[in-house]
Length: 265
Image 1 (tube, rainbow, N blue to C red):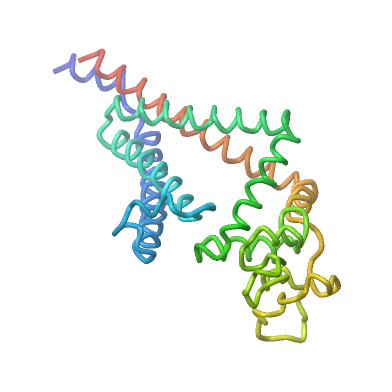
Image 2 (cartoon, one colour):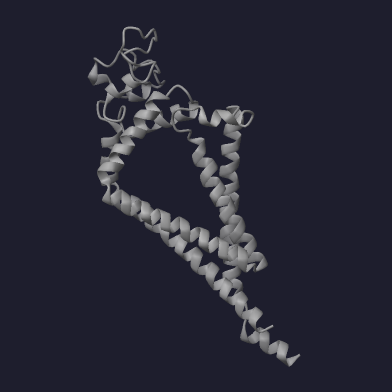
């Protein structure tokens, strides 16, 4: 009996570390489940779940992928961290640490590469935006994302309004029968403070009326926004990185405690 008493006194699992890691991860787990649920619901509404082959049909980027991927990663990490901490399962805790460390390494690598290859990243961003300009009418979620970006950054197209010539509905060719021919989406229009209702047809035939639409491209405006908010953006990334390192340290600390207790059995 005295030997058993010395065991608990000599090596114990820290309750603070255990339940803090559990509480942190259960919130992470639930948030991941919510993101994943929203993504699957959005796909169900668009009929993607009924016909999975349509996933590859969209020419542009489907924003639902953000919810699916981010939600899935958060769900898996949250599950491993939550159950691993609660059950003191070293395998799950190690998986949590390695997975979180891998994500941290990928983020760090992406940040360094983005800084070193700025011009290449800019070209890829230009290609990405133009590719989604072509698919603007193909998916309502993509359309809403582009409209939000153009309104938020007061821009139009990747480099300017002419980029919308890439879209089959807005291009200026004589063979285009669309009413939107030679126009731009309403999100390219300079907002009139006096208007309470958004005029969704304000961009029609407006390529020759430059004072009514934004003339700056979204690549340049995004770059300018990054420079103006560099401290805030850097602070967010540093905060996320510190949380990841903190999570890894807690998990490893808990693994060490569990191993120490088991060593004295």
